[in-house]
Image 1: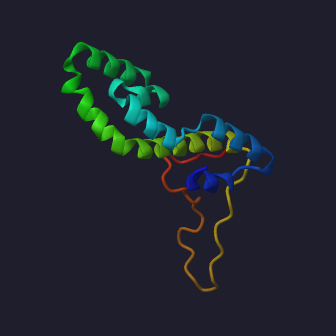
Image 2: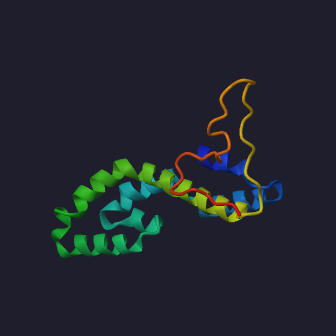
Length: 141
């Protein structure tokens, strides 16, 4: 589990944490396997199929077999060898966010804001804390 997924696990009810962890492990992509697929089969888009982007995989396969692959597929393959690990991490973080949003839903109250010292300004203390890196704010009803 990525550190981001572990931080989201704190927001999920204890009885749902097992289901969250199971689904995360089931659908998460392994960066090491993606790197191997990129090196071995990246020229024909093998890592694109693994990451679930089958349209890109088909286009790369067609490009290499039609002859324009030397100008299109080979440079993309070289760049992809260096960026696939980051793409796997981004995919896994978004997966964790999606699963956490499903399991949190509206069933859990918002976490309490941190306590301030007496006499300290409480400006902005009523606002719900945000989780860094999320593509959108989570709304609880």
